Image (cartoon, rainbow, N blue to C red):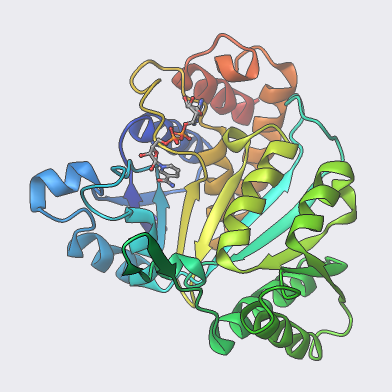
Amino acid sequence: MPSHTITLIPGDGIGPEVTEAVLRIIAAAGVSIQWDKHDAGVLAFEKTGRALPLELIDSIKRNKVALKGPVTTPIAEGFTSVNVGLRKALDLYANLRPVWNLPGVTARYTDVDIILVRENTEDLYAGLEHQVVPGVVESLKIITEKASTRIAQFAFSYARKHGRKKVTAVHKANIMKLSDGLFLECARNVWRDFMDVKYDEKIVDATCMHLVMNPSQFDVMVMPNLYGDIVSDLCAGLVGGLGVVGSANLGTDIGVFEAVHGSAPDIAGKGLANPTALLLSGVLMLKHIDEGAAADRIMAALSAVLKAGVQVTKDLGGTASTYGFADAVCDALKA
Ligand code: NAI
């Protein structure tokens, strides 16, 4: 009997390829999982008329954990983003993105070790826009005490649990005094229960400059949704790009683990996709389901393959296919 049942969304584009690669590696690490597989996005829409089928939502609610490949979002027409829909339907309020250097991956810095925590449910992502009069539109930035408090609690709890020294709240409260002001007020209130962790605040534009000039000064960072969206990609750029960073979307008792890159239609089906980002998300998932030892073994095997730099995909300077890379990690696991 498998020890875990986990919802699997292979996605589309390069999604099925990178997902298959990650499943091979997790199996080679000896973790027994029954995958409850579901379509989302275009594939699901064509079959069921829904980009986010109810059976998929029910499966995740039942299993509490999902591994998700990238899903294409049609631009300016068609269904709304599956990713945003999932976060809303499951109240996945925290986006966690660990950003650190991997051996053998060329990057601008070698000392990056940042945990970025992004509020996932509100801010300008509420999508509340309307035309006031022709030529004038309004987009509402929603910040609530409830969501700001729980994301701050998530960031400080993470810092304490993982022996992190400092939490930085990122804002623009000098201009958005009410909305970002409330976000900061909530973070300060939560800090009162976490005085063993240092706390500071940084304006978002200055944060970007400091990240680019000296990223090692940052530890855990917490911020509203839109700043999180932008700053997290900037952070990925510090360590080699979106292909080498994993992420988790977490709610009270549900976790959806996904790569941060998209479905890459330009390389889909060609064996060129790098599975590292989804594998790192898979490693986060294994830790989440108390398979930490397997997660550590996978990290060691991945690091060995990346360091050797031969059996890696083209984007990392190698010649291996997606599955060639995965098989090399599987071999390293057995070594
Ligand atoms: P993208 O991340 O799919 O591609 C950007 C560039 O990076 C492309 O040149 C692609 O070939 C390359 N790339 C991406 N992942 C790679 C990998 N694993 N290995 C090697 N190269 C890789 O971004 P794009 O083109 O803006 O988006 C394509 C589609 O993906 C869109 O429909 C978008 O909405 C969707 N998307 C989905 C996400 C998700 O499901 N979480 C996240 C971001 C975008």
